[in-house]
Length: 414
Image 1 (cartoon, rainbow, N blue to C red):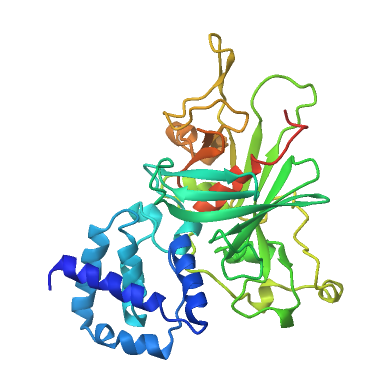
Image 2 (image 1 turned 90 degrees about the horizontal axis):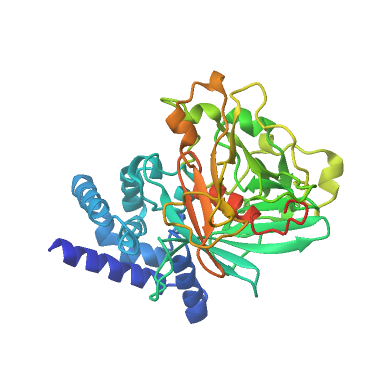
């Protein structure tokens, strides 16, 4: 069998898996829509019928299977063709185990594959280039993995967010899919919450930080009574960062000034030889010692106790948290506006446009080149189209949350 025939048969197997559903034809359509919406289903369980159909593939010798999947991974480097790698992981348990063993993190290989890639740091050299599409009618924001929108609309949807207004501020609920923003869903990734003035935002992750010290010091928030939530559904929010906008009381001209404190990323990650926390899988259940609450909090099952924004980094007594700041723009006399070099990725002047670099001092021993490197840039290219390019040590989720803060109304900052 030729390699192309093998890949074609993998696609046929994937189509056959998608047609199996306990809910009939309607459930089948819903399942296929979900798989097209995000990177890959991160599930370990398979139905008996599915295992029967895949039995001949599960019995391949491990050495042969390893060689096949490695060749597939090396040949399919970008979306949508990279979906074939996801199909390999969806065949059966043995295929998934070997595929996960071969696939490297975005930092190492510069590719996005599984959903957990969205929580892992981006590449160190060239950034991941994405764009955000805003829908004013539904208050939704869709993050696509592509240079810019095109006519075929065959872009890879990475994350989706929905804006929810509250009396005390605004919430941006972030999900893996564009049609389910329930916080009780397995597709729930996290949220961004603002204060009343829209000057300070807290980034909450649905899973605990990788660092055990950060887990013990992070403020988790339980949204539902334990009897009402399945053990596989995320039941907590963990504060992983804050975004603060400087007040503009005097109404001086200029772009917004912002500062981001990434509580789960140590400043040592950008030093020579440093590493950033890299989760390896989604955690759909929370250990008891990570969610210790008082009796008074348990009595109220409807409140979200994550509304408070911590004023200090979550990790105490350990490495300092990474702080990001605006890259200073320059005033262009001819254009009469503030300018930044976005290298062609931003074409429309907007107060929302920004570039973020690391804010470090001499004691951190960070090179000048690393200090000037743009870790995240965001800018406007159309009426409701914005580009988002992010670098190591930020993940797609963290970068998307920071960019979402720019969409909220900030009368006190402009």
